[in-house]
Structure formats: C-alpha cells, structure tokens
Length: 214
Ligand code: B4P
Image 1: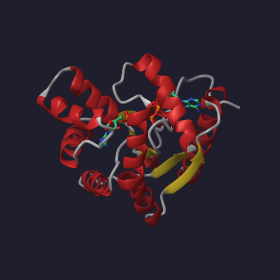
Image 2: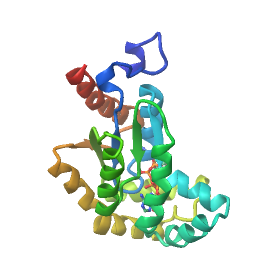
Image 3: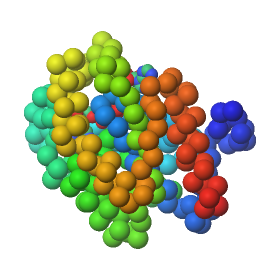
C-alpha cells in the first residue's frame, strides 16, 4: 500500500510528535542512483526540507555567481566541488531553516563534509537520524545519466563525465558510508527497481523508525 493511501486525509505525514520534531535523513548513493528523484517523494510525503547540494550548485552556476563559476569547473569535469565551497554553502541553509528536519540529497559526499555536517547539527542540538544508501549497478547508473542527458541539458550527463563521476564516487564518497556505518546509522536499499518500488522500500525504513520513537 502506498504511504499516501494509508493517510488519505493529508498529502504528507506531519511529524508533529515532539520526539520526532527533527528527522534528519541523508539519502546516499552514487551519481544517478535516484537521490534527487526519491528526495522529492520523501519531502512531499513526510513534510521535510529538501537540501540538495547539486541543485544549489546548479543554481549558483545558472546565476553565474563567483561560487557558481568556481563550482562549474569541477562539475563539468565530473569532479567534486571543493569541500570548503560546499560546506560554506550549506551551513547558512541549515541555520536559516525551520521545520521538522531535512533530507540531505547528495551531501555529504566526503568524510570532511560528513564531519562538518555533524558539527553543524550538533551546534543546534541535532544529529543525523538515519542514512539510506541507494545501491544500483554501475551499468544502470551510466544508462540513467546518459538517458537524462538527452533532456536535462546538464553538461555532466554524458558517458565520459558519468564514468569520471562514478570513479570520483568510489575514491572520495564511498568512505562516507563507512563513516555512518560506524555510527550505526547506515541502511542499504536496492535502488534498481522502479521509482515507486524504491520509494516504498525507503518509506518502509522511515516509518519503521517513526514507529520505534513514536
Ligand atoms: P547531484 O545533483 O547530486 O546529482 P546526481 O548524483 O547526478 O544524481 P542523483 O543520484 O540525484 O540521480 P537522479 O535522482 O537525478 O550532483 C551533480 C554534481 O554536483 C556532482 O557530480 C558534483 O560535481 C557536484 N556536487 C553535488 N553535491 C556535491 C557535494 N556535496 N560535494 C561536492 N560536489 C558536489 O536520477 C538520475 C536519473 O535516473 C534521472 O533521469 C531519473 O529520472 C532516473 N531514475 C531515478 N530513479 C530511477 C529508477 N528507479 N528507475 C529508472 N530510472 C531512474
């Protein structure tokens, strides 16, 4: 059953119980694993704030800000944007936001970013609640990114850059999973089913947590 069918009277599930006031989810995974796609569903269903560093960076690039011009060089080459740029960009967003928590989409992507996020949250008396890691085979990742490139207009959505992004993921981002595993917060989720099926699985993990603390 879809989560929204269980709660027909609301279009998202309000996390209003005091204990659930802040629910901070990291949606983790390689490029093209569906982080952006699933974040949209999660945000809509559970009434959380969406914080996508990819979207924020693309907005800076589109507005040709100094940060955007700097970030574009890395993004076009399939490399990660430097930590200090991304961390600086995200801290004001966390400070300036109200609500019941965040879905962090595409952030953190390095151990330095993960440690910085822990510090930023700790300063507000908060913490990451859970990390859901989307697992998708590499050939499917490339297929999706190249396919998205036919309509996205994104300069990083082509086979050559996609392969570089996946290599960058293995070198710098994958250790972030171990970082959260050491904290007992990591759960792997198969991300190569349909968007709806994957969302059902993610929602199941979120609701299991809600049921535990409610
Ligand atoms: P991001 O914008 O984060 O995006 P992504 O990794 O390309 O994709 P995502 O996993 O969100 O996939 P999506 O749902 O769109 O990063 C872009 C770049 O920004 C990075 O390479 C880096 O340079 C920079 N950057 C961002 N954050 C950074 C950070 N913290 N530090 C440093 N640099 C950073 O799905 C992809 C495609 O698959 C879509 O077309 C979608 O429709 C399709 N799809 C999704 N789920 C599917 C499913 N189940 N079945 C079939 N297709 C599916």
